Length: 238
Image (cartoon, rainbow, N blue to C red; front, side):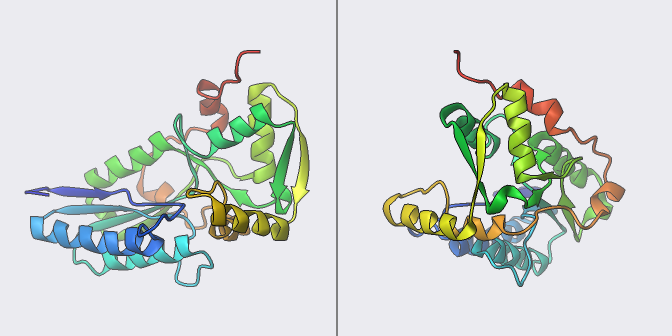
């Protein structure tokens, strides 16, 4: 890091591969970054965590995100931690995945009925929060939950994507148990499965902001999915 004044650690992996486990990347990777930041004499340290990170989380993703937060909190650095809900943008692996499913399949599965709620936030709004944190010293030593202006059910989100793309598809409810069997099979035969059992644990709970502190300490004009998605979700010709 040389003589870095500020460190921004955007750590995160949804599908562990080989030695790149949740723990090695989230916790151990953060511990290494914190040490290097201290050694470099960094003035500020910003950590990307995730909404749902907590000590009693069911998923390894959220458990290790929490462990990474603990490393930051104990670092002695002037830190700010952000916990965003699902981040969407032109090159994301979230809305684009469902967009491709809508293009290619006449039917769409709703895992667990698609009733779980989430609060997607535009990637450029996440950037706004990071930049403002560097400008506002009062945000040091704090953790913020980030979400967009609207809460959607998973089914409602898929309906929105179909509306934007001008397509209609049949939907069916896929029980969690059946989805778990599919995920286990994909994990056993694919190096990077599109669905894992750990991701299913996260899909079984809501992912919405519960702490309004970010709205009080920052001045970010949140953009909705309805505003942003039409700009990059396009159906194949014909």
